[in-house]
Image 1 (cartoon, rainbow, N blue to C red):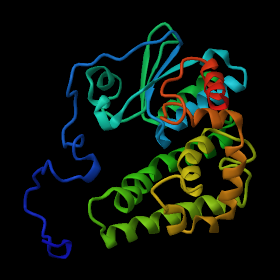
Image 2: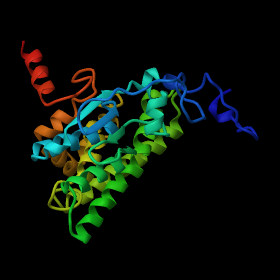
Image 3: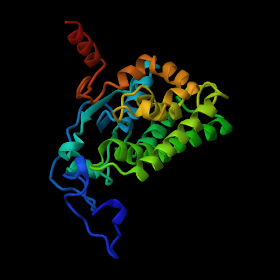
Length: 283
């Protein structure tokens, strides 16, 4: 049956074979699928993640905090392989009942605090260390508005455009058109704002920029979804391009984007891990 002939049934039922590349791990239920405890390192923060845009948001902030001299922000970053279903282990689900990366355990205080959703982690860490978030009411509101804008936008780019353009088992013109339009609209929103200010929240670099860069930088540079940058003609958004170059040149951002990746560090347990990676590349 072609998509043009499809008529939704009165009651939807799950087809295990439907879902393309992710059919083996996607299902309409929540909760743990296996008993698997999480490893724990020595640092105050334990991050369980993968180097996707959502994961990179948090590792970029950790590296920026350390670069700024906040030694208390030391962290262990453990790899969660979502293609292997690590996110459905009992230990991970205890931290994140939504079974999505990243998940974070803050052990820096008298009682451990769990965090799930990348935006919640960015806000928690920024407020904890008093960094990368404005302290005045107006600036803080602007920063949080752009942070929440990014959090609300990501599903349209990843689960929407990215899925139907690059991962869906069949190409559906309507779906690709719908999410291409929305992705370009979001880039236009950012481009207009970055024509007014150096960063999204104003003159200063904040967690709103880190969150948005993790997604927009990847797409703009042509590093996601095959030839998506050309398909969407992202070079037209010149203010975004200037901002991408500025943020991408930051040493902490470069480090953060290497964490929990096959081409970088599968796991990160100290700053020395980056030195070892660089030595291996040179040697």
